Image 1: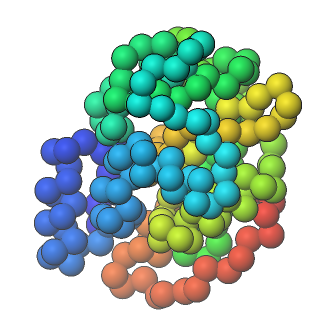
Image 2 (image 1 turned 30 degrees about the vertical axis):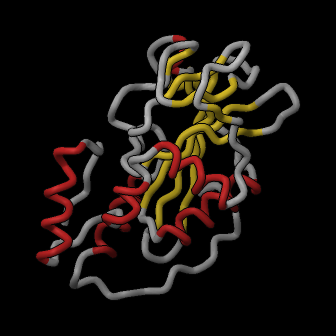
Image 3 (image 1 turned 90 degrees about the vertical axis):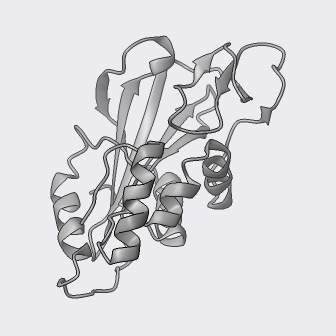
Length: 206
């Protein structure tokens, strides 16, 4: 089985060869390729009910985030140059990272608060409390895209609204407490594992 930690163009031929020769992938190839496009990722987030910042293909007035088409091109940049631009949501310099892992029986979720990379190196701050609306959206994303694991980045504005700004199929799960769920998920994805239906999760953080 192949479980890729990052997605770059050089990894796609290997993932494609694995799919053609029957080597299982943790996250499916179609979703991995599709979500390599930031625009497709944002559309997928909207499709499952998340709020996303408005985007333009010309630099907007005021502060903004510049992004490239592909996730591997460069990191988003505050007030920089990019292929498209999103309005900067006024917020504290904190990202809310929520993760979901399908362990073969349940979809487990966890949230963490970290410092925003727009203003310096990312640093873990604390756990983020369970938010049923975000958990519900994560479940829909996992189910509709047939994922095993995903991370979604949010920012929170001064009206306590959460905006989804990025989706990552090769997320880092450090400090999430989901290590056991990932291990079970990988075992359940192997060819000799007994296939089990995924039971609905009650919406509580695991």
